[in-house]
Structure formats: C-alpha cells, structure tokens
Length: 130
Image (tube, rainbow, N blue to C red; front, side, top):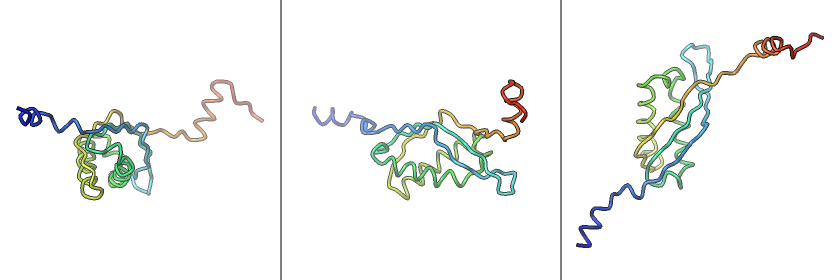
C-alpha cells in the first residue's frame, strides 16, 4: 500500500516558480538602420530548480531574447516561439528544465524625445522661455 501511495504523488510537487518582473531588454527593430526598441515584460517560469538556478534562467532569457526582433515579440506566434526557445535553450545550455513559461505582460517601452517633453511642459505652463 505504501508503494501505491508514493506512486500517486505528482512529480510536480518539486517544481518551483520564478517570477521575473519588469524584465527589460533592447532589441533590434525590423525598421533597420540598427534602430533598437526597448521591451519590458513580466514572466512566470515553472520548473525544477528554477528559483535556485535563477541566474541561469535569466542568462538564457537574455541570450534567447536577443535573437528576436522587437516587433515579432508582439505577435502570438513570436511569444510562443520565445517560450519554446527559452525552454529548449535552458535545458541544452544550462541543464535547467523549464516546464512552463507564462507571459503576464509584454510591451514596448516608449522613450519620449526631448522635444516631446518640452512641448508637454509648455502645455502645462511649466516651461518658461529664457
């Protein structure tokens, strides 16, 4: 009877969850001219030892994400490809088994130009001409 009980314990009990919030990276744009766009994302990653090996998971994410264009990550296909590539790369290069990757948020970070900031300040009456 003990063996039957032990056999019913799901292997998922040893899985860990790693939360990566406000992960940012500069990625090349499809527009060309070596233009980069900053992306920001919140991820939840499940797998064996992902918390203890978080530095390996973050390294894998940095390597993998650099192989995508920013615009591609905004599509469903791009997000699914990112998840699969991260799982494969982590296992192959670092020996970290990732069971699941959940994207809570992913978007482009807007960096306003100086002129836009000055115009906004003028509209609010906070910028005076010298």
